[in-house]
Image 1 (spheres, rainbow, N blue to C red):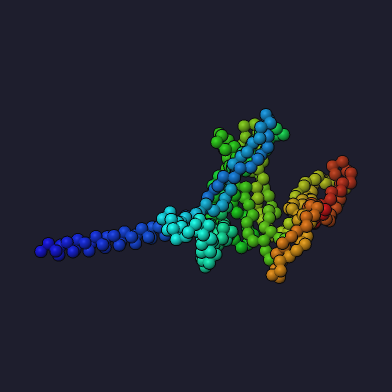
Image 2: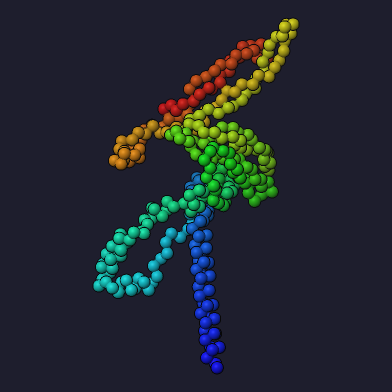
Length: 319
C-alpha cells in the first residue's frame, strides 16, 4: 500500500526538477540577451595638459562601447581532460589550435568586436555629458565628459537630435542645456555628411557673469567644407522722394565657412578585389576650408560715406 504514494512522490519530484531546469534555461537565455544587448560607459583617460604647478593632468572623459562578454571560458575540467589526451603541453597547444581552425563556428576577435552591442538598427551613443572647466598652466580649458550611454536608433535622413550637456556640475549654478547634434546618413555622394547649418544661443548664469552657449538648431547634408548663414546688421542712409534723409537697418548675410577638408592624401595601392578600398595612403599637406566667391553690398553709412561689405557665397578646400 505504501508503494503507490512513493511512486507519486517520486513522479512529482521529477516534474518539479524538470520545470526548474526549463525555467533556469529561459532565465539564462534572457540574461544572456540582456548582457549582449548592452551599451555602457567605460573609462577613457586623456592627457589634458599641465596644471599651474606644472604637474600633468589626466582626466577620465569616458567612452561609449560594448561591455558584453564575448565568449564563455572553457571549464577547468574540460581543459584537464583535453590536456590528459595529449602527451605534452606542446601537443596540447597544437591540438587546440587545430580544433579552433577547423571549427565552422569559430569567430575571431575582430569579428566579434565588429558586432554592434545595440543591434544592427542602433548605435551606442552618450545619453548625457557634462562640461568641466579645468585650470591649466596656459589658461582655462573646457573638457567634455561622458556620463552615461544608451542605445540610440539609427536614422536614415539628416535631422537635429537632442544632446544634453551639463554646465557647472555639482554647483549651485548647475544647468542642463540641449545643445543639439546632427545625426543621419551622409547620403549617396561621397564626401557629404550631416552637419549643423543653423545655430542659436542660450544664456547660462555663472558665479561671475552670464555666458552664451551655442546650440544647434538645424542640420543639412553638406560637403566637408560648406557655407553657413551669418547675419550682420548695418545702418543705411537714403533719401526719399521729398529729399528727406532716412535711416534704415540693412540686414546682410555675410556667411561663414565651416567644416573640415581632407588632408590631400592620395591612394598608392588599392585592394585587388576590385573594390575602392585603399591599402596604402600617401600623406599630403592639409588644406583649409576658405571662401571661394563673394558678393558685394554697397550702401551709405550713418556718416554719409560709401560702405562696401563682402558676403561669402561659396567655400572650398584650399591648401
